[in-house]
Length: 232
Ligand SMILES: N[C@@H](CCC(=O)N[C@@H](CS)C(=O)NCC(=O)O)C(=O)O
Image (cartoon, rainbow, N blue to C red; front, side, top):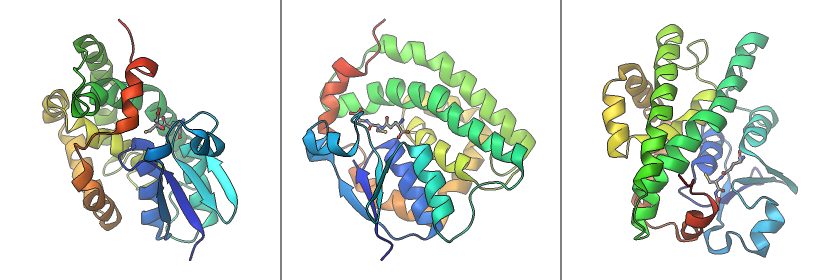
């Protein structure tokens, strides 16, 4: 066995970036579902900022998704997911940073939480949050579409790398919202990239595994109304 454990909750965007990278590298891992103890002492002991994922590898514990996937790519055999050339590697890091700053917050925290996560808990969406996110998402999608036009099949030099895995779960969530579906209709290169990513056997297997959970309530997300929801 690889000695790898991923801690998190199953529908988490960032947790699934890590699971996708591990699966693509062919690294077997155990998944430890933290949902029952999110925000409690056991969770805080693993992650002082009370987020997910956390990776454990033979006694080594690591949080922060970008650190985790870089570690996984370098510590294990399997296809390398980082470009060798410094400028291309810098572009991969630019994508990871852009996902953290400009894609994930508006697509997931703002739009997907209001349209998918809160309604599943019986909490009414805040339309002001949705309305404020849409122009930001439109900009992010225009950037991604233009980059795919230049780079081809994948985000950096047309070759699959960590950047593609970083973007994938957020773009999938976007496609489950009505606003996202409308926006993606006008973005053929992003749609083709999504299909290409979802056709990878490792990606298909993980998404098939979590498919039955889509739409189920994420109980600890009730607290996000107070902690995470922007106020306009
Ligand atoms: N900077 C962190 C962000 C992780 C993050 O925000 N994870 C979300 C799930 S996708 C989370 O743990 N949310 C739980 C909560 O806020 O209660 C990373 O890169 O790992």
